[in-house]
Length: 135
Ligand code: CMP
Image (cartoon, rainbow, N blue to C red):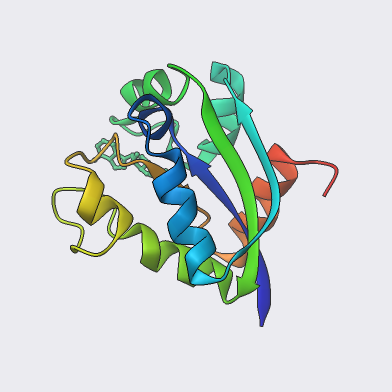
């Protein structure tokens, strides 16, 4: 079933000059770009995006990180796009993510893990509405 999902190329991806590489992986997989924007977000947008994590111990430094510079927000579309993007991203912790995944190949951090992908159809709908309300 064709789905849309929200992807963030976090500030570490932009800082490290990896936007092209990460986008290439998504495109090469066959996912279609539906929307894309370079944006620097404030704490309020970070809190909305990570609403389910705001009380967690790891959240304050995560908020500092995601607001630390421009990120690329995008919506991609394709068959089973939510699971497909999560598989391409790999496990959250870059140190443990499998080689061949974006995080496994390019990240050595549990926080600065380059990418975010919606984790369910419900979060995809909520997150797409939050980042691209016109869609
Ligand atoms: P993401 O897929 O965007 O979802 C939540 C984010 O929180 C996650 O990627 C990481 O960037 C970050 N994160 C999750 N768990 C931890 C943790 N234990 N320590 C630091 N950052 C974390």
